[in-house]
Length: 206
Image (cartoon, rainbow, N blue to C red; front, side):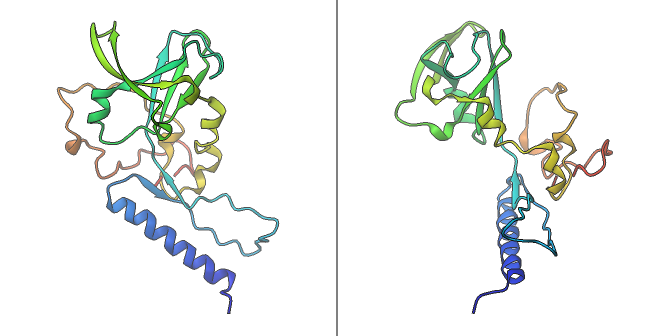
């Protein structure tokens, strides 16, 4: 006998909560989506935007003096991704590397998820640091257009469907904090940051 829609929904919600709580137990930044029970939902015509979960991912942003507007007119056949030494020390992998053209303001991106045998390691001279740097290098063909990343980033209009505080994703931040050294385990944000006084109602992350 087939389960009722409400029974199936409860089972789905339980599975989602178990998954999110499991990732939180692993120390990963994941939030619940709001669990909405729509009394007059038509499964054939209605679509509920509430996510099962929302995850925090790292994005590395690199400004380039190169002029380009898209992956197609990026002026080189290869892209410098990151210092191999830094990659080896990263506690977590960046989801995306964003390349911003200083002359045009346009940006493109790539993801390490696409890394394959066509990526190479190359020693390059870093003029800013004044010494050679072992660099991960990707073919230009791995660059993606900006709209394909925009489509993956969670929009402000749906933040009300995240179960928790989300104000930091709307405004604020960007300040420089100076320290003598960085010790991850003593950072005040470890274990979660308490929400600041809300500037806007209804903007909540979990």
